[in-house]
Image (cartoon, rainbow over all chains, first blue to last red; front, side):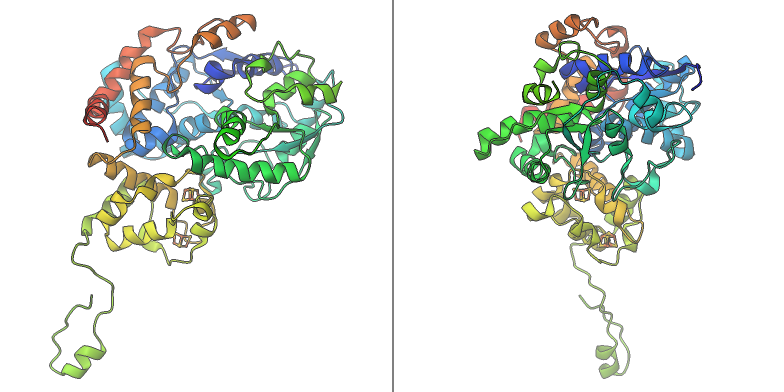
Length: 305
Length: 193
Ligand code: SF4
Ligand code: SF4
């Protein structure tokens, strides 16, 4: 274990800081325990939402994401983030602008109006993938940081879409992360906390919310979510974990909406991986603002006691 | 629709007639535009259906991604852009992940949505997001319940984003205005559908 601190500019996005602030707080504190320092990325905006913005005008999506990237370039620091949707925007636009001169020129033309220039000097990573990276943290170091193991609970992992897919376009620094058909690295991260990760049918299916579908046709989106909930409940999941606050919103608020719309009752707690890690490192439910969750985390917390 | 070849032997002309499917209302530029905006190779599609078979939206609707790819190849612009199913793609990228021809069907959909927006065909929820971002920098802005929770956690009420540093918002507005996005969103919303 090296004593070196790794620093990243912390890109927050929207849903974590503005709906589930416990994720933001937990990410900062739990990472610090692992020798990872998350620095404020001042003045960052929405990534912007890849479905909503990309659908309207991809050029605006590139330019808006580039502005966020330039803020980190000015700090001379790589970005770490905690949301798959943000990963899609920030990682992918960074990658595209680094590799397509014409696109970069277009974007810089616009950024010039606000005295900015995309140079392509930094990298973008998802915090979960940083945790898995042996060069920085790794599963063993993660397990060492645990003070209150999450014993006796079964956890279903929802990987989400935009961190891993499309596989052909992704490049990860951490080894063993790229598989999109049946990845297991997040299960390893969950097992490191003392919990039991469970396998369920069609694990890699989408939560249903993306691409603007949640806003366009909520019943359609919720029907996809409901299918995942059925598959997770079949194997007795006590909780769902993910690394995407938008997926979290869809599963958490979605269970309530499914009750209202379809008359089907669910009560499976939904926790971002950083919230789980926070609990396992001894943070209290109050430290994580779990009371803001739509679905009560109490049954899950009681099982831990 | 078969294209006449004008061979002197009428029998051969009929037998060897061009059987490529063409329709009168096909738009030849549609494929080109879709491929350029989507940065993908729609014309390589051999209609295997792996994309539709991977699609979470297919089993619960009439949305068929393979059909949209075909429409791109055939130049069926109107059919594609006016079909309400265009907006049922969750952009999960399962189709793109699995396409044996290395096409990105998801990005074909994104390109078609961009083209639809140019014609002012767009669901309202997309435009609302634009308005939020123009005003606050966030697609999902902060609120008072959340501010109180943040303070309880020892965070500042406003995150270290445009929410706390409002001086960055004019820059965002300039970018959006450069593309005329906010005005167009306002205009379409005012017209109602
Ligand atoms: S998977 Fe690819 S080749 Fe097969 S139908 Fe879909 S787009 Fe065409
Ligand atoms: S990206 Fe869209 S079209 Fe492709 S599988 Fe997912 S929902 Fe279906």
